[in-house]
Length: 110
Image (cartoon, rainbow, N blue to C red; front, side):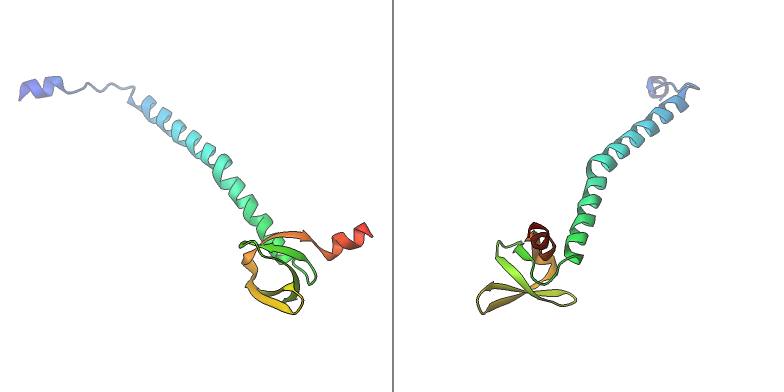
């Protein structure tokens, strides 16, 4: 039994230095995660929310499924997309991936 106690690592008074360096390391890892992963994801989410909230009738859009069309109507959570003459499909607003051109852009060009 005394042999086991003698083989145990000795603890000195400088043990608090290890704790501080460990906390600094965890802080650095959190900062890296925040600036490399969390912050850019929040920025993309805000841009996406802005895109969806600024949809207007007449905007040309591409859905997440690759469907090209023009917005024919807007409701609270859905939009009506005209994909051909007389062919309209209802989509959830979150299905809009890209706005290729809008009424505002068309008026600026003219």
